[in-house]
Image (cartoon, rainbow, N blue to C red):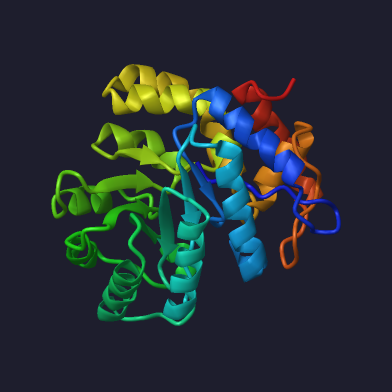
Length: 286
């Protein structure tokens, strides 16, 4: 799951709330935590803060749950620095978003990820989210990168089952395919994917853990039954840019303060009730 970074109203990190969230996810059966991904506001924390949050999350988890550090950048050298500090902080693997804004070619994407993998000997997951990055790691490039020993999987956030099947047919059997799209996550797993790196899981961890277990076991009927109450969260947690809605929801649940860093702003008033209704439907708010 993609963990939020709790913050006070002044934007400073609330490590006490972070520790409580880690404990909640361990108790709820969450399979792994991504620290400092998009949901963790990686774009607005500086390098030292980024490394500190990853390191302290590892300390809080204390080996009870894997921690994956989000270490991507549109600068290859900066991504190497972040990946090294994540490794030094004890993460189990790193998640590297495709370089955003500068729109590299497929060869540029290949060389970017290859260079990082060769520079830092730690398991690495690609992260393809064209809606945010303005570039797309195509299946043939994923297949090339899958040949590099410590590139072990991909978070594929296009929401396309056709894309998932294409990648699945090109990569080795031990290459991990993880959905980055909650709305299609259940179907992704039922069609052969290995999990979902979820935003919804922040708000409904027990329900998401149960749904994922059913989907990974191939129990379509049970997985879809468990997913149905979560469908409102899957959509309404993206009424504004992630992590705006999910941080509002967790604050509404009394789990974190209301802090969020500019240029992100608190959830607009017009979306409060739709998100509350989705939370009620999922059973996480009375």
